[in-house]
Length: 174
Image 1: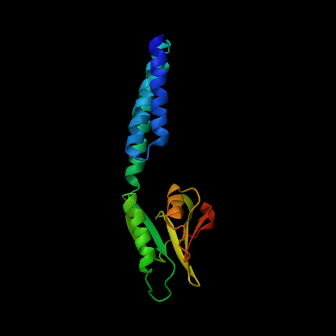
Image 2: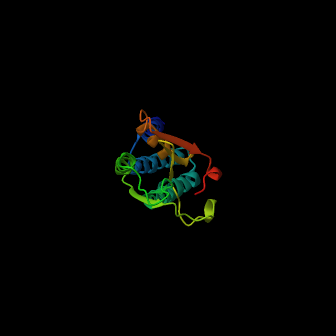
Image 3: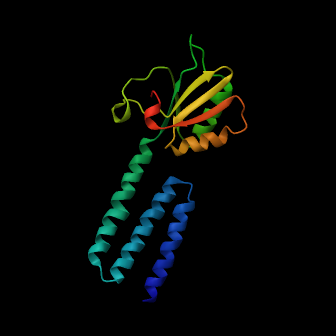
C-alpha cells in the first residue's frame, strides 16, 4: 500500500508541473507521465481495465492529439484594415507583432483587408488579429477565447496609441 502513496505524491508533483509549465512540449510530456502514474495506481487498486484504458488514451492518444494541434499552429495571421490606399502598418505596430510572434515561435503573416466572407468553421483562413485605425489610435481586435490575446494585451500595456479589443467569435468580420 505504501507504493500507492508514493505514486499519488508523484502524480501530484506531475500535476503541479503541468500547471506551472510554460513550454507546451514539456506540458505534454508531464501529462503523459501523469497518465502512466494514474494507470499504475489503477493497476495496484485491482482495476486492470481502467489501467489499460488510461495507458492507451491518456498516455498515447491524447498527447498525440495535443502534438498535432500544436504543430498546426505555426502562423499568426493578421488582417490590416488600416489601409485606404496601400498604406502599410506603421513600424511600431509591426515591431510589437514581430516581437510577439518571435516569442511564441510563430510566423507573422500580414494581409491587407483580403479575407473571405465565410464565418466560423467554414472560413478558409483562421484570422488571429484584425488591425484597424481610428483617429490616431490602432485597435487590435482578436478572439476573446484566445490565450495569445491576453499575452498581446500585456505586451501593449502602457502604449497610448494601441488598444487591444477582445471580441466574441461572431462579432469579428474575419
